[in-house]
Image (cartoon, rainbow, N blue to C red; front, side, top):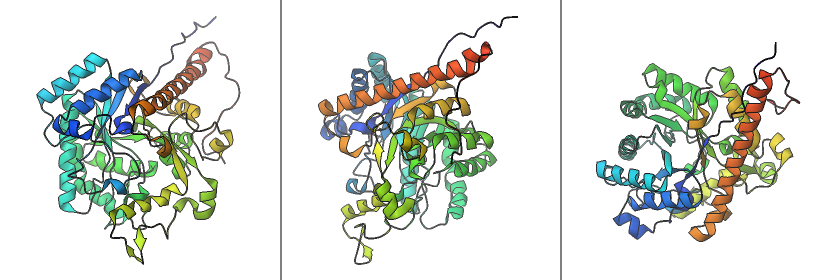
Length: 415
């Protein structure tokens, strides 16, 4: 008896771009006076680039931040300005711009240390997160994205206890609004001039599971999810397929809720010099054995990372099959295949967000940056479409007719 063939129906992810890619799209003097203009301008810019969604970058206003801009490695933008509450009038204006441009918002992102050891600073950051959750709810969004952080005065085990004490209340605020908090896993090695490499404790799958178990104890397990970024896996010598397999084997294949599309290109000479622990001495953030009094020097703490690698804007790095096998750059096609094969995803409602942090292409000029971002968005979209087509063929169409898939492909835990 002949089987009825399954139709070919590939499912694509929701393309998006993080608005920190161009901080100065709306000049500071304009957006400070008219905060929602920055979002309107980005929605229009995304429309021009044929990107159907944006991820709105939120940050403490430069006058309120505790970290000077010159000490930061990657761009931060307060596209969403929350010095004043995001009230119904503001939401109506942004929703109107979304309708006019036909560009959506996948989520809101705020990357800061929410486990800071200073009580006053931490309270200020947490209050900001609550305002961000209010804004997400007002826009009808499902999620926000950010870091957990680290209390520098505690051990990693101590940070698990601290997380339970101070982060769970934030997740309860998220639950009250029906919103997920998705943790990006960057270890943030340059966040401090100290010797710690792991300054965001949600940096790896085993810790996602440990944190999620704490959340489950307090009834907020559904609020804790991961916004996976393969660049950070590459930084730590991991590969996407093995990470996703580990999550599946551990019963946590549900925990990834969204993706950043950003790569990492490892410099083998840097690894030869320093190993994966990064540069530990003579970086320039310390002078004469003491922390430099110049805040700009503290940006040199990022040499813990930058001696080893450079962020990749998808599509801008050369195709490097050997690099894939050595976990020194991201295999984008296998990344998108592995996500579909190993994770429990609602693919059509899963965000795939371009995060532009390639230093030499980080241009604060719309005319110059536009074709670069356009190319990267188009590349990521086509890679996702190719993966979707392969997945539909391999897992739906061919099996429905008892036709085997050819070859073996990349395997997890490859050595």
